[in-house]
Image 1 (cartoon, rainbow, N blue to C red):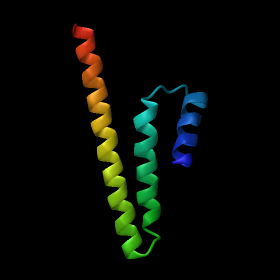
Image 2 (cartoon, rainbow, N blue to C red; image 1 turned 90 degrees about the horizontal axis):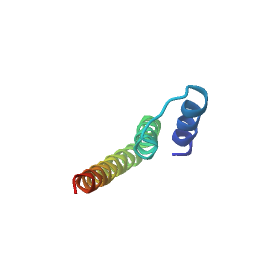
Image 3 (cartoon, rainbow, N blue to C red; image 1 turned 90 degrees about the vertical axis):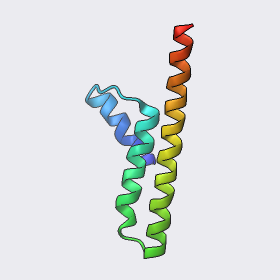
Image 4 (spheres, rainbow, N blue to C red; image 1 turned 135 degrees about the vertical axis):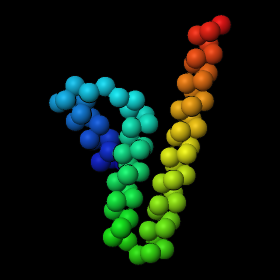
Length: 76
């Protein structure tokens, strides 16, 4: 996750990119964890991939619910 945060920081500072930093860090981190899990033992690899999928679902649920709340407050 630290590496994902560092990459996002570099994109923002050097490439002048603007992204949804919250979700971007988690999805990049999840990607790198899954990539590195290929070097792990099978049971560790399975646990890491499962944990990443759960993390992605939580981030998606949070993002969707916060956008939904924000959208509804703008309508009122």
